[in-house]
Length: 443
Image 1 (cartoon, rainbow, N blue to C red):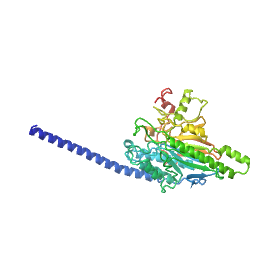
Image 2 (cartoon, rainbow, N blue to C red):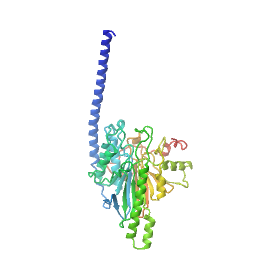
Image 3 (cartoon, helix red, strand yellow):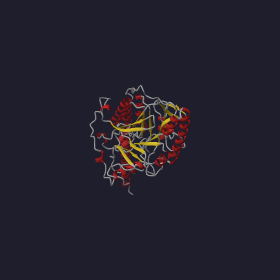
Image 4 (cartoon, rainbow, N blue to C red):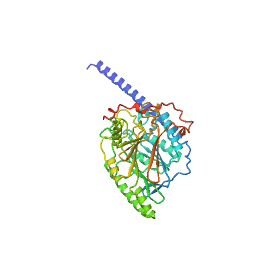
């Protein structure tokens, strides 16, 4: 190589280094700007979340932590509001949509005055190209500030987006936050360390005779699996076997507790027999994020029958408005539903995950319900459509029965904060958004 060629090569190397240096500097500057912008926007939304007034509810039930469980004691109905897929980005790119989600949650909780709010996953959505941050704790802190400001008891279960593979904080770290004594109204418990996941726990409802009239099972349905760390191929996880064993164990323990409480609490044989009929097997509801396979099986059977009820399926309300797979379940089979049937305790399951699915149906003796979602951010264009946005109202009765209804956010009763929603949305026909019945269940 000649001296001239060597000089030219050196000049090219120096030029390349300068270009790389400029690129690195630009990335560094943009990163700094993003960090500063995220800090500013997060602070603004934190202030918004903290600005709402306490929900006035003179008749509210205050839970007590006893024998390892948060327990509501009442002889009246207990009102639960299910929120799901709030999808707060917590970054500078999502600030405006985050404020809409905060206002929606605050409006519905304020209007409904529930005894308990259960959030079935995806409070956080730390996807950088939509949120502008990897900090998933920002969203958790904003939502917690909202609920603490409202002074309403609440509990989250984890969804797949709460702790992405690239998020700054793990489930364990978020659990430390949600379980902190600083959150007076959050009933989150990390759960048994020998059971997979975080937040597997139960909340009890008892009557004045110390009988469990309803147990609320909270499950971590995990995230992605089989090497699909970033969820690119929609390989979702399932409830694990040791979680099912944990559930079976608790149902057995609660049944034993009720047997003893019924014997002590009721005087006549007639009263005892009636109590055994209603509570000998403890009534329960289950809450988790990713729907079980039976959601798909039941909806497919309903559609195959011309969208009419069958012997196994009775539709209460709603529809499936998702495209593609429509019902995104875990990729491996589990026997949670069969175990629930066998034990006879759980009569209702409440999930989220599929934002445009709103149906609630009874399937083989167990009600399968999608919570109405809040999401303004995760789905492209979802901030401009509204049929799916709202909450789910669950009323637990003293006799162990329950009712539920999906409630649209765009009702007058919820237009009570910040001058209403100030949104321009299309109330779309969800059925028309779905693919033809013969295609939507292919994997």
